Image (cartoon, rainbow, N blue to C red; front, side):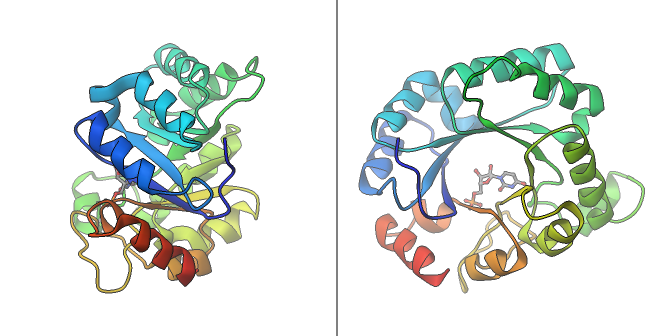
Length: 231
Ligand SMILES: O=c1ccn([C@@H]2O[C@H](COP(=O)(O)O)[C@@H](O)[C@H]2O)c(=O)[nH]1
């Protein structure tokens, strides 16, 4: 496996294995990592993970587990057995679920990074208000990030818009994994809390998750190169 020098994680949101492998083959594993989410993993499963690793990529398995502690712990052990680099759970699964998640890797020699999802980057203040949580969306992100850190997770998924505050509050080694990244002028699509790659890094992001601006570009390798050069 190659350790990428870049913070970019390319989101492979495809309905089947073939286009995902085609895209991966056009990219350089020293220039990015790859993310496999619910759509692609449900269609293509562990074999795809093996094939991407065979091409030299570290893989973030983005299944956002959210279930009772015993079920999530089992799912995480299965993920670790695939040798993935990063996995995630929803922090809103609560303290006991998060502690069971950390404990699931206690006997794993080289565990994946364990990251907690805070508030999805597709949500804005209006979406958030409907859920009737206490405080603002930003308060909720910070509350969940503190809980994740307290339970022993290595970082969170958040918007880069929250990165400055989280970096101040949670320190320099806590990983901030930020989707909702859009190069200047790119379509926001369904994302609501967005920043450019350079703004996100400036705000303190550790990793930039970028999907459609790369996968739907006429030349994905050139789109990735442009993002890396902008950092
Ligand atoms: O809060 C979150 C958590 C995960 N994602 C995932 O990141 C990518 C973003 O893709 P784009 O095409 O760059 O919008 C996608 O796979 C999401 O499932 C997120 O966007 N926000």
